[in-house]
Image (tube, rainbow, N blue to C red; front, side, top):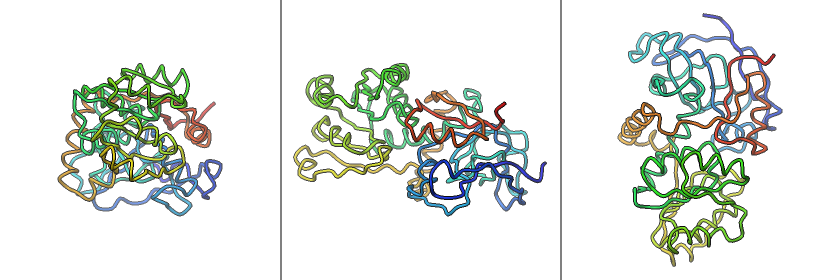
Length: 332
């Protein structure tokens, strides 16, 4: 095992330009830890926000971003029982994945299913767990229901389209250009609309026999959130997943009362940490879904580690469709 490795290090909270590829020294494993040789890491919108100091988890520089990756185990602590060197795995955490090596706790590691490649496994866990937790655990989406997925061309949005399709619901997605809308259709959406359409709420209602959708899945926020509330059914469920638009919406309480819909917060990572029984239930469900290849990621960009700035900029400029993956190789 080498004594050093390369990592993408955020050196200041000024955005992607603050990221440098620096050599890191390996450190001994502590109890319960696993060292992974990373083959690929998945970028998530929070990774970009962390480099700007705008995410709820705000590490001080210098730090290595990256919340999920896939690779091979190269070392385990003596008390680790579930994994051995050579095992193909995927892992998640609050940071550290954008590196050639990553040390994580045993509980954060899971076997890489045969249905997923390293690239796919690197960007499966976070989006899939968010989609499952939102639609199943928090939203209780049923096969006969309809769901509006805002920002459906993003990584989480694509996973939500596929999860809702797997459940058997009618899926309406939004995408800002024809390339994105085509990808959303391929992911399984029944209907795809332009979020900038001034008649968006009316068109959604027309697709649901005038009633509106049972569930809104919103990782976008901003003005689009209020459009979503106008397209929701009586007694509907509005899932607040994130604020990719950069703007946090304010919901009019009188409208919530008049239509009697529920505003439901979604914390797919924090909720299982606070509830061990939920953690077991969520982990078991995700293992089954991964093994079956459900929510297989759509990857629009695969970029080498030494071009991490470019990869983060793709997210910043809203050019990604589905997922962006960092591969542990250098560009020629």
